[in-house]
Amino acid sequence: MSKVVRFTLTAMCAAVLAVPTVALAQDWIGTGGNGMSITILTPQAKGLPENQSHLPALIQGELISNFSNYSAISVLDWEEREAILVRLLSGSYSDSVAESAAQEVGNAIPTTHFMQERLMKTPTGYNLQIRIVQTSDKTTVASFSGNFTYDELNNLTGIRRASLELLPKMGVTLTAKAQEELAGAAAQNHITAQTALAQGVTAQRRGTEVAALSYYFKAAASDPSLLEAVNRSSVLNANISSGNMGDNIRNEIQWRKQWVDRLTETEQFFYEFLKTESMPYTLSYLDAIHQEDINFQNETVTLSIYTYLAGNENWPHPIERTLRAVWDGLNATGKKDSWQLGRWPQQGVGIKDVFATRKNDFSVVFELVNSQNKVIGRQTLQTGGSWGLSGSGRPSVNVSDASVKTVSFQNVNANDITDNLTIRVASVNGINAETVARNGVLQIRAVSRGSFTDSRDGKSYRTVRIGTLTWMAENLDYQTNNSLCYGNNTSNCAKYGRLYTWDAARSACPVGWRLPTDNDWNNLVRVAGGNVAGKKLKSETGWSGKGNGTDEFGFSALPGGRRWGVSFISAGYRGNWWSATEIDASSFAWFRNMGHNGDGVDRGYSNKSFLFSLRCVRDVRP
Image 1: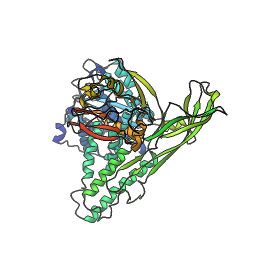
Image 2: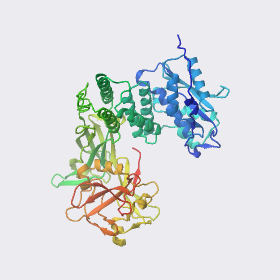
Image 3: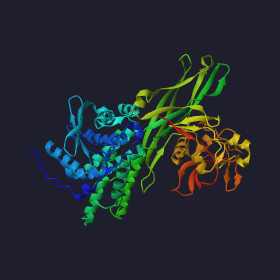
Image 4: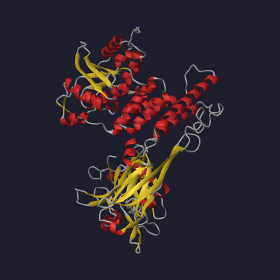
């Protein structure tokens, strides 16, 4: 028997306005639907298994994204709409009641159209039905029906295909570029972010705030431009961190019990999460082959390459931020020690070792192949990383990467060596390398060296790819305002590149290149060995005293000095490089420093008017 419900819309509903889109004009021809507005509802779903319960929110979120990005139609703000729909559509209702509720929302909120969707599980996949209704007369102006596999919904291709069909029916003439984008695959970070946002919305509707917060943090980390995830995480984080469990709690025993329940919920969520998701790692190797020992009697030689392993820097962030939110809330009660909960989360209340240090070990078989496709050398690399909570008190996730390791192919027959040698990975932990990469646990990348010519002045620069960034392997030497040669001597520009103020550095890089952020530098230092990164990044010559490095990454950092106030200092002894990250819109910004008397890379901040060296970076696809 269907549940009968009377809906009463508050004045708040009528006050909610459609939000203007931020789409670019080149995505449509003509008006793009300007003047229209739409409320996109959560799909009514039937027959979904538990592990696919996020699909309705995922469909809703991607439809909102597509209509916002590929038309001038105003889309009702998700967060405000959700607050209304939770009140209207909580519980289980018949189709007729749900349709009535959807129409009532469309009437009460000032949008010209509303979209209803229905998702049905079928024996072979899923059937998605979409109907766009004109609010004024309840007539259907556009519809879609399609059958999809789970993967086509989960990777957003099916939803984008539906948008591609619906938008023209709404009078939107898409450009060829927009049609191609909607017909193709979405970027992986967008898929990850939308999926995490949908999982968070689903978890929050069920009242599992900790799980919701973790998903929102993950969505925001994957795509910082996804403001819905950023906003929801901020609100939920403030709620959990406050320590409040409700105004009606007066009994301290009950208060403690509710906090124990929240901590238990947190542990259970991460226990299940960590059973199925391991930290992804990237193993990089320099494709430059070094000649080592020669055995003249046997006519063999040892050839070597450098490798380094790094954990995904975004993966631990949702874990750390969620744990901190819960810990801050527990701490705000002022009772954690008297409640005997002071050692949480290092010691769990239900699952005691849920956040114990976790290790990932990899046995990687490298092969050296000549131009006749003959394997002339084979060597196994044992490497690994770990992560876990560090210290006590407020949680902090510590990620330990493997240091730079050398893979040496010994006793290579000199007669088998050809001009072009190739490095390839045969297997990881006994599994085909391609299979491991598809599973997402370990990505393997070659660190390629190359060159770039600046079309503005014809100067060429060596480059090196490290991770997902290509770095210039030389300091920039492009003349701008507020840039100088060290000591005003042009020969120093040829040797060290130019010195720039922070403002000049921000606009000095060639088109397609940019000033590296503070986080870009953090990642470079981390994968290059942390406390000894300077030794491995510095050039093999050019540093005073014993300051030369090993240049294991081809980064070739040189001591270009700086202009500090009105004085030029430290050329030959010290190198300073700007980051793009300023300090709270002040007159200071972060920079990196390497010296002749240390092996590290120091982080500091400086007045933006001082002059430092500049390295440009370019983003590359994984």
